[in-house]
Image (cartoon, helix red, strand yellow):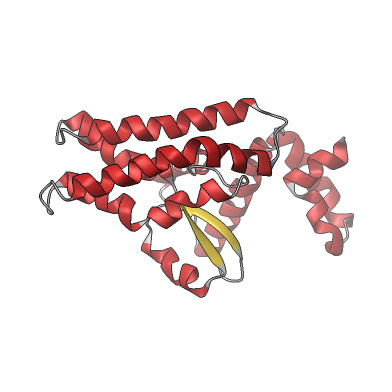
Length: 216
């Protein structure tokens, strides 16, 4: 479904994306939340004595992001510079910690697997430091998907492949409207009324982020 699309993709280690990364059209950006989750699971289950150390360092990175969110008037370049000054040293600490402990734990242990997950994806996990437009993780996207993932278990069927694709399109518009601070019902009601007479060449004007600015 990424065919023809170019840009930065914040994701986990899903193998289905690898071919797109190799083409160079899609840039892999690692999701720090997925890296953190590996250590969190070990910590809460008591399967690792050192996982908490990694969690402490990762939490520092998230604390920095929390400070950045308070700077509502900051530009992408401001965020990049702030991350270079504050996040980069913490990332270096984390990288050194990962390499140090990888050599001291059994290679087949859960701790080694968690460490290896981050090490093999380190360039991708570090990419957000160099671009203020990139987030540290894709939690917002996963949270947007959660209602539909839960619904899928209850609905069981979409009727057909085509109806499933159509449902996905509508769900995407609804979640995009929410992310842009819109009332999904008001947005869809207006767009559906305007569609029959709206020029196809200007269809992008009806996308959630454009629709909001048009109404203002």
